[in-house]
Structure formats: C-alpha cells, structure tokens
Length: 135
Image 1 (cartoon, helix red, strand yellow):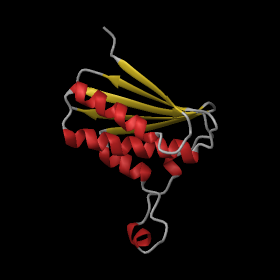
Image 2: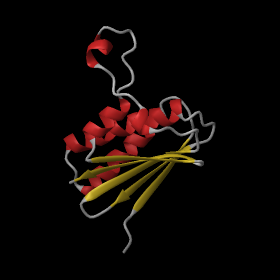
Image 3: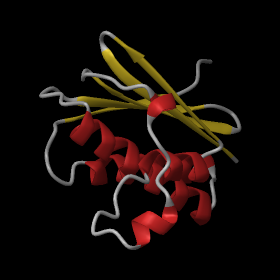
C-alpha cells in the first residue's frame, strides 16, 4: 500500500496557516506523535506557510502535502512564486535582533531547529519546502 497523503490547498489569505496546523495536528495524532512533536510541527508549518504567503509574491494558492510514512511524517509546502536561494538567506544575529524593532527573520532557522530535516527546492515553477518529523 502507498503512503497515505493528505493534500491541502490554501489561498493567500490572513490566518490560513492555521488551517495547515489543524490538519497537521490531526495527521500527527493519527500517527501517534506526542504533543511536543506535534507542537514543533505546527510551529515549523506556520513559518513555512507565512514565508510562502509573504515572500513568494504568488497570487496563487499554496499547496501542502502531508505524507504519512511508517515512522516519519513528510510535509511539503509549495508555492508558485518567485523562489529564493536558501543558501544566501542570512541567519539573523541575535544581539542585533534583540535591540532592533524588527524581530522577524528567524523562520528558516526556526524550521531547521524544530524539524528533523528541512530541504528547499526552487525551480521556475516556484519553491517547495520539504520537512520531516520522525516518531
């Protein structure tokens, strides 16, 4: 049997990332993931969705695929936006951010800290972020 997959299409609208986290909570529960891992997945997913909404410049929907493997949840967040190179996005300097009025810019680093793996793929068709969390 193939791995069950849940697919979600979200319009670029305020608070739609919450629909993504609710779906992730249902999938994580189905897999038997504990509350801490479920919360980490939700936080990383919020960052991935907000990045797609705000930085891709897409007017289209974003797409989320939750792929349920035996011991691992794979989440793919895709957009049809302008793309980016994750290698050139600077990790913020904590000392500068603490004293700054702009506290944002932690999304990529936060996703990497919260998930087991995070990979970025950008093509002419947009960007896909693939994140995994193992039981």
